[in-house]
Image (cartoon, rainbow, N blue to C red; front, side, top):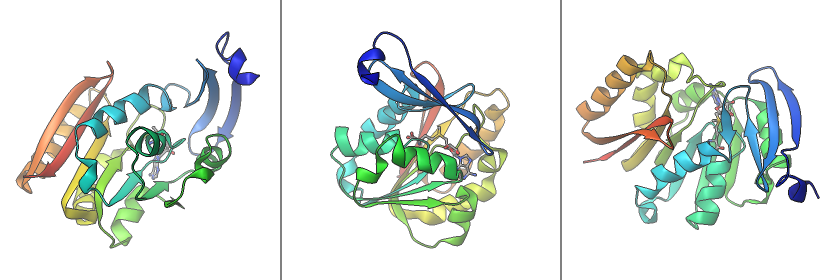
Length: 214
Ligand SMILES: C[S@@+](CC[C@H](N)C(=O)[O-])C[C@H]1O[C@@H](n2cnc3c(N)ncnc32)[C@H](O)[C@@H]1O
């Protein structure tokens, strides 16, 4: 019934989180979305942005995925349903409230070979030594990428978590102050012999960076 009503008007549910503020689940055009106060977190434009990135890479050679920033898990739905990607996915999320929503409201429990870890993404890349063929970096608090993820310390650890021919997809925001930070991340990746493609205004909003081995 909720699904049918959602074609007529969005039905919202609000959830409070210490880390992400007020979160809202909205039904829109027959599909549930997860939003923060000012941003779409999952299953709306965010899902289309990451799908655009996935279309640019060859997933047949990807045997493991690390997702930093689970949100409602819409990129996992894209990988499993649109790209028929069945291999292992490890997802890191700092907010237990979001993890519970992803499992209970967005059916993430149904996916096999999906490991969800409640941890700070920086701490995870710093302290784990496993490597991954694809690392998707989608870390936001509302509209902002937290500062530590724009520092080269973080990117140094990310490169250590990436397998030799691995690929990185980074969803960067459009904040003005991000300009020089993003430039230094791109230079850093290039200096470590990566091919870096920058796609601006993906879905009219975000900048997406894709780095792969030369
Ligand atoms: C845009 S949402 C991710 C959407 C998700 N990738 C998807 O496909 O639906 C951003 C997420 O980053 C998480 N996040 C922010 N800072 C974090 C941190 N330090 N460590 C781990 N997750 C973090 C937020 O809690 C939020 O769930």
